Amino acid sequence: MAINLTDRARAVIDGLATLLRDELRKSLIKKGHKNTGKLLDSIEVKVKASTNQILVEGIFEDYGTFQDTGTKPGRLRNIDALEEWVKRKLGIPAPQSRGVAFAISKTHAAVGMHSKNGRKNPAAAGWMTEVLNAQEGKIEQMLEEAFETEINVTIDNIIKEFER
Image (cartoon, rainbow, N blue to C red):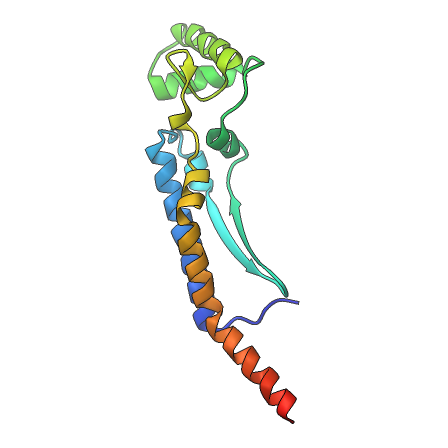
């Protein structure tokens, strides 16, 4: 059974979803992860209300998680995919792009992803985590605003029912 939301509460929740989506997209670009735009365009935020909870759900391409958290060292990456990235992002044509892709894969295997100049580069990670942490207070404020009226009405109804 879903919570019956007032128009005001629905508008606040929709505003929260839009705020988070926009902030996530800005962060992804700021961190330098806009290549084809596929991940950027895939970002959606949905807020769902059920009987006992509000669920804020982020939806995006699977590899967005790796862009946020990076990867641990240990294995070579997909050379073909890396080579395409090298061509698009770095503008290095074939056949040099293959060698660069192997070098990047070797660095990822040695230090993980994200890396820069052969060293771990934590500044490139966190496009999602940092936004959610920074927006936590705003999220709470917006949800409180959305449900303040609903809570007051529920309390009033309980009191009226008890007084009968």
